[in-house]
Amino acid sequence: MTVNTQPATERPDPRAFGLPVVEQDDIPAELRALVGRVHDLIGAVANTTETDPRTLAEAAAAVEGVTERLGRAPRRQIGTMVRRDLPGGASEFGTISNIVAGDTNPAAPPLSLVPTAEGVRGEVTLDTVYQGPPGLVHGGWIAALLDQAVGTASSLATSPGLTARLEIDYRSPTPLFNPLEITAEVERTERRKVYVNGRIRVNGEITAQARALMVRVPFPE
Ligand SMILES: CCCCCCCC(=O)SCCNC(=O)CCNC(=O)[C@H](O)C(C)(C)COP(=O)(O)OP(=O)(O)OC[C@H]1O[C@@H](n2cnc3c(N)ncnc32)[C@H](O)[C@@H]1OP(=O)(O)O
Image (cartoon, rainbow, N blue to C red; front, side, top):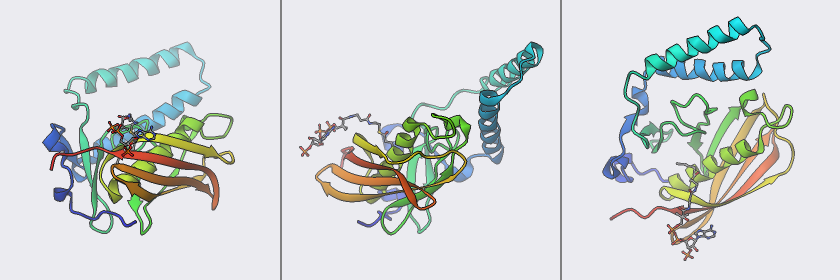
């Protein structure tokens, strides 16, 4: 199965369904920096040993002030998409605040997936924001990473769809602070059904693998 390298203009355009589209290159560098600093903030808050009430109250007030200031501008429409150019001339649309891969979501790692000859591949290192058991990635986040990978592989090879079924085998613990290699590829398609396999490797060893059924969304001709 090869990756769909149709230009974006020939793929379903979210604008046709009333969804705004932002070009990835148009996301201001300052917004990217803010997203990064807020990600750092999540980690700092989750792990601080600060107990001084005054320091903590000041920090909360400072964050509240920034939130209030940013809240003066209207929020993005739910479902706002981002169009990204991919290596090799392909492009993709994704939701801009996707919790796994969204450019503007400070809670996202974010996971960036690129097409390969087989499917898609990405690498990400997770910090304690994604901790489940001590020192390990939360199982739900392992599923989320794999869901994103199988969904992207299916979308690029065929057309966008939704996950109908996702089965995860947790084969060994997936550690924090280690590069995770995430790959996925389409196994076969049947009408709107796309069967996809994915896996996470750490130092070349598979720690988790997924079998998924994506059902392609029917688009008007
Ligand atoms: C690039 C972006 C990457 C994004 C990655 C993230 C992906 C996600 O997280 S998606 C969010 C989570 N998933 C969802 O919310 C989906 C919720 N479910 C649904 O909306 C629907 O059940 C949906 C769309 C999957 C299927 O509904 P519908 O379009 O009516 O299809 P339907 O006609 O019932 O079924 C189509 C085929 O799939 C099969 N099928 C549907 N669901 C299942 C299932 N759970 N198990 C097995 N087969 C199924 C049907 O039997 C049918 O097969 P056949 O062609 O052989 O008759």
